[in-house]
Image 1 (cartoon, protein in one colour):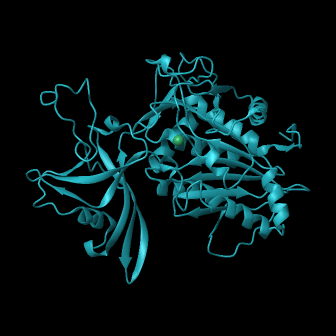
Image 2 (cartoon, helix red, strand yellow; image 1 turned 135 degrees about the vertical axis):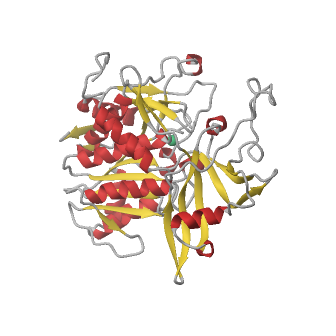
Image 3 (cartoon, protein in one colour; image 1 turned 90 degrees about the horizontal axis):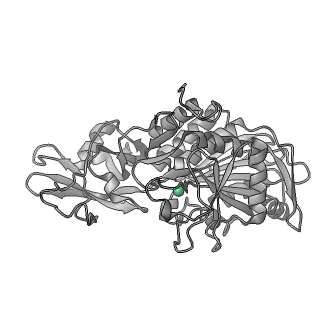
Length: 451
Ligand code: CO
């Protein structure tokens, strides 16, 4: 399209970039992410299973399960042969934001009404100032003696957190630190005497009475639309790229994968940004119990299940840091990543990332077979860096694993930036992973076949 593009057309896949932007828009909260993934899976012939009911799973079948409406596991049952095992790609459905408290109205000063919100995850606070915000999540509504869970994400600018003018805060460009209980309360109403309450606002949009609204899980949403930009249309920016870019890529890969012996699994977990310790987080029983019941339903015994887990492979997919254009000094010398240069394989001696020589070699070979470039990321040795879900999953499901991600800027800003080519690279890499059969021997040598 652009005559200036240095990228081959199949790598700068603008159609895929636009689908990613649409996905970001469809997923303003983890509940919406699980629903968006479920809808796309159903359109591709996946059947929904419910954890509280019996399962009848057939070889070759395609299924998905949700937990708490905010985490999802989907799988395509492989033919298994003599040696059933799982090829798993895991990402997360949540992003740093602010959660609205149950009694949210802060009346005053004057006639203002602000909302009382609590931080969720590691937030770049200033990225939430001076832009239209909305709300997204779920609301429990009472109807004829039953409580219904309704998703909520009005297509409206509803809130804004204004900066203090520079004339009242001469120090803003030096020490711009913000207090969450004071500086980060979104403005809801200018004249609280006449315009009703927060619950009234929810009830009106849901078409119910105030008394029917029982409770809510709602977070703030940056309303700025995702965009593909740059002279060569090589950047994609939007809210929640960490980690919806990986969730989106793993879905596309699963839907495009070829048949293989392995059972292909997509997992997308809520609550990664707050430590994964919930009923539906990566530390929960969700994924192990889905895999255990899948094996049981196929007539496998306990020891066959344990063997299948041991023979499996996990790709933990969570976005990585690209070198910041104004601050190259913040990154390691050799082990640093750039936008549009391929999938990042992350490592950490302290095992915050699960990558080791064996699993790096495995994933590098998968990427080579797919024609996908790889990059390496390690933190500077004087920085602890972040954490992710791969090593947490190991506590419940111990298997060979690699930590990968797509390079991005401004991680945990309310508006993040990544490379257009990298989404396509991740789709191709994960598609090759899902399509491959492989086996590891007791000395950690391996072979990949049928790629
Ligand atoms: Co992440």
